[in-house]
Length: 248
Image 1 (cartoon, rainbow, N blue to C red):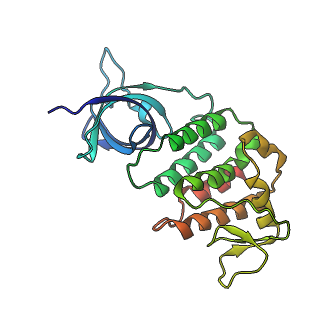
Image 2: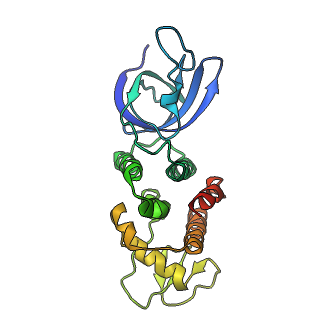
Image 3: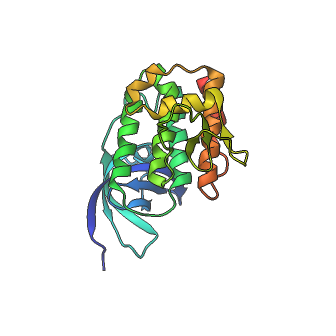
């Protein structure tokens, strides 16, 4: 029995060659969350039709018509087309590095195929904002994304209300007045910068938080540790050293 068809948007996270002409793609969908799809024939170009594998490059936002069977791990796509044509995201070296960092973070953080339309909307909006962002926003965009994305995994950093709570406990995800007994905390300018970044609700506000190269590096490494403390098997991000080098 053929499974029913559904229309959904999808964000391509990863694509792997399969056979001579096909792809297996990992997609975060609006309707079904994380899914794997077999897309047949997209690497084959003919006189009538060019190869369409470029639609499935990581970061693509697509309109999809998919078959969905909850008992299968590998689904199928019937129709696909661009939902968005980016201006800079695939061509600008810095923005593309931020994009790849975001995609790796999503793949490390989302393991189960749970539907979460709010998360999909956040991811879609984030990529559209990044595509249009000026350089000052792009440089701090990974920090903005890290601090907002963790809320969807249940370990959002709490915004401190007390001015004298200047120590960030990374295990508890909160600011405190006293140093914790363990070593997973930050204080000083790192903690203060995170306090300021937590107040940023829209990417354009990032221009109000100027950061030096070494500050940004330390903040990225601190938040990578924060994710690793709260997500089993998170480990180290492969795209982080590349991102740091590109951001300078």
